[in-house]
Length: 114
Image 1 (cartoon, rainbow, N blue to C red):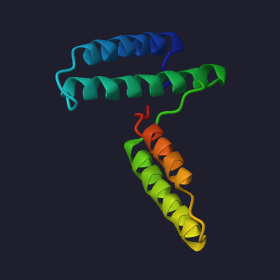
Image 2: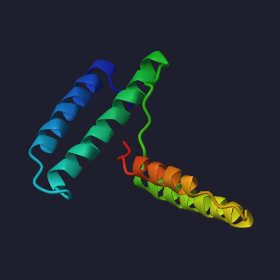
Image 3: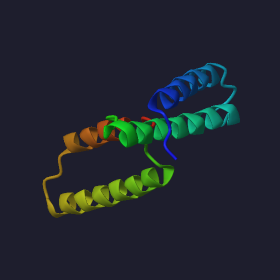
């Protein structure tokens, strides 16, 4: 079943507007309306991207992240941090400036993923 790209684009734009409306009216961090709008937006994007590919053999430059991907990435990051800590323990000359760099990196990790 092939969707017309223009129709899929119209649905995507509507989903973007609905998501913005939901975010502007958010009542809490776990607001169900925002979560539903987020999922509708992700679904609309996938339909548009597939329609674009089916009709024009073209794709968008965007990638959707799955919640399970985020969990996997977090555990990989923790493993990498553990490995780097082991390397530091072998050095007798520990440098306190390195710990400041680690804190800056941790702050960057708090951004939400799309």
